[in-house]
Amino acid sequence: MFYFAIDILGTIAFAISGVLVAMEKKLDLFGVIIIAFVTAIGGGTLRDVLIGNTPVVWMRELTYVIVILSAVVVAILFSKHLRYLRKTLFLFDTIGIGLFTMVGVEKGLNEELLPVMCVALGTITACFGGVIRDILCNEIPVIFRKEVYATACILGAFSYFLLRMLPFTEEYAYSAAILIIIGIRIVAVKFKIALPNIYR
Image (cartoon, rainbow, N blue to C red; front, side, top):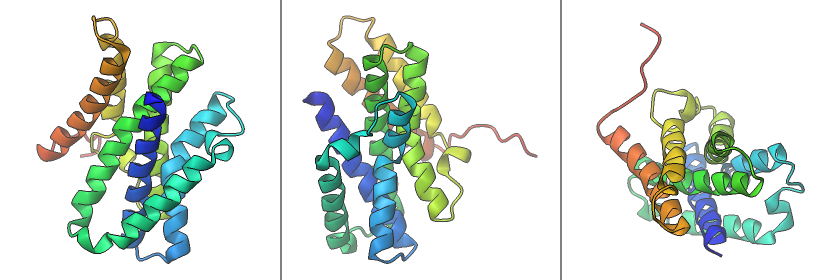
C-alpha cells in the first residue's frame, strides 16, 4: 500500500506538470490531456516494457487513468490560481522525479536486478515521461540541458541503497531517498549548480 500510494502521488505530480506545460503552449483540451498522459505514464511504460511487465501497469489498472484525468480537471479548474506557472511546473516536476525514481527502483528490486540496474530503471521511470512531454511540446528535454535533473535521480537512488545498509526501516530509507532527490534538484536550481558544458 505504501509503494502504491507513492506511485499514485508521482502520477498526480507528473500529470499536473504535463497540464502546465500544455497550457503554457496553449494546446487545446485534447492536447492537454495527451500531454498529461504521456508525462505521467511515459517513463513507467518504458520501464515496464524493459522488464517485460506487460501489459504495462496503466493498461491493467484503471486507477491510473482515473487519477490522471482527475488531475487534469483539477489543474485546469485551478489554473488561474497558479500565478507563477514556471515555479509551479518546477515544483510538480521535482516532486514527480523524486517519487517516480523510487518507484522504478522498487520495480527493479522486485525483478531481482542489480542495484546499478535498479538505479537506471528508476532514472528512466522518472525522466522519460518528461522527455516525451518536452519533445511533443517542441522543447529541448530538460534531461539534455545543463540542469541537474537525471543526476539528482541517480544520486538519490544510490543513497537509498546506502541507507538500507544502516539500521533504518525500508520505508524510512525509501522516503529519505525521495527527499534527497527533491532536495538536490531544488538546491541545484536555487544556487544555479549545473553540469559542465563541453562547448566553449
